[in-house]
Image (tube, rainbow, N blue to C red; front, side):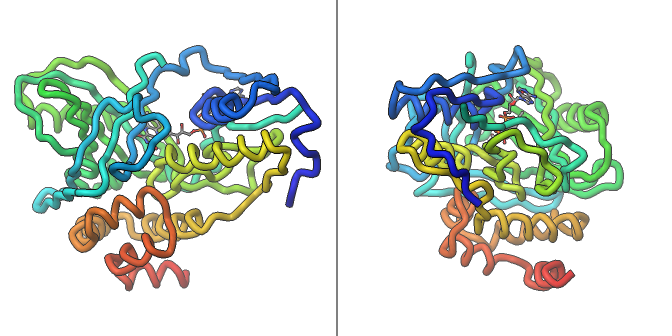
Length: 329
Ligand SMILES: Cc1cc2nc3c(=O)[nH]c(=O)nc-3n(C[C@H](O)[C@H](O)[C@H](O)COP(=O)(O)OP(=O)(O)OC[C@H]3O[C@@H](n4cnc5c(N)ncnc54)[C@H](O)[C@@H]3O)c2cc1C
């Protein structure tokens, strides 16, 4: 289905939400032309806070916001209480974009939590310790499944020699509160570091999959609301950046925008998510085994964007039985 009015007839563009997609869309429109009046509406007075983004970048490839990269790593780590895997990549790096200060209607309002298939809830502490930090990112450390916290793991970004960001993440369908997660985070931090200073605390809750049909969009959805994100992981930067560039180009050249394109990536991610929801208790082992089988570059490629090539290596690493079973259910 297409919107019939060409964008060139109008001078005013309204964007609801000054989040990642809203701001990137405005940025790319202004980069191309100054002939539109763009208004961005934002309900929160503190949107500049908690806006750090991490994602994989292919080395030596041009990146629009390279001056904003504050840290990059060549390796990342997975573990269970008894096992660990370290990925080292020569072609990809995991980068941190740190944001310290950070007519048509485009709607980037967050999807209501009642419509989520699964929640990713996290509490993170930026801490200062006297211990020397490892120089790799712990992507999914100490993955475990337990009845109280469901599937949970640690996400650790060593920011510099003395400080690191330590986050406890839980994937759950239950109505978990932050206190429970924070309690567990403190227990694990204290078991690792006998003393530390807390510099910053971050709480977050993001959707992993949601029911599209229940959304009531105002105008054209963008961002997570439009499916511009990875439902199986919650990562969105690369997908939103790519799509907002395309949208801005279309707007500035008077072309219409597909209302609801179905991306191959979304179909694959939704299936992965479904398998995860059905087999959550097995996933610490499933993921550690998959991380051992898949090559670091192939993993980073798949996490950056799904196409037939990046999917093939992922399929090879999948435990076939549970994925086929969930495909048929
Ligand atoms: C703490 C945290 C850390 C994250 N880290 C990463 C990461 O490292 N890498 C990554 O790829 N992704 C990360 N994510 C996910 C990423 O932030 C989101 O997927 C991304 O911001 C989605 O962009 P969006 O534009 O769709 O929505 P948002 O960025 O959430 O923007 C939506 C905006 O709309 C505003 N809004 C809502 N309702 C209204 C209304 N009625 N009127 C006006 N404004 C409204 C909201 O206040 C918000 O500012 C993280 C998320 C959180 C919470």
